[in-house]
Image (cartoon, rainbow, N blue to C red):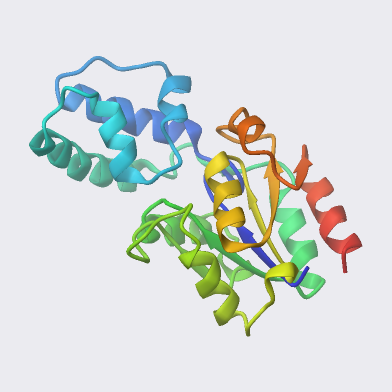
Length: 217
């Protein structure tokens, strides 16, 4: 393994509470009742427009969804660091992988401005040579465009030397579409989705991921 591509929410950062709070604040702003935090978290993974569409429900008009999305993005940007933290072991694991010479990047469906602010604010921005978000390209995960771009930017890393790490089926399908290996993490927002799209490797702790990657070098 020479290139590791990480998802963000549910993989590197525990952002469940801040995302759920932003979803419910948006629903209340739009005249809807709040939902359980676990329900709100289950809507995460396909980018902010899809998240807000799910939060607004099937009967919402496109105009209402657009207004809700604009409000959600503004609210979330102001509150995304209220409770969000790195998962246990992530900082130490990233340090170890960086020191071993691994190239690392983030590929998420969260807007890129938010993503870069989060990794920087949590003190791990320097570990990644690139951070791409859901609006960095004209297609989001599970489209392989992000993986293919990162492989090129890392110096033409081969598919067989690249690993995608994520907590949901979106990440596994991204890896499959890009022809690279996939590692699933069980501590994230959507671990049940890994049953329908099983990864090549499944880890329960960041230390297990670090050991796996270093053993393949």
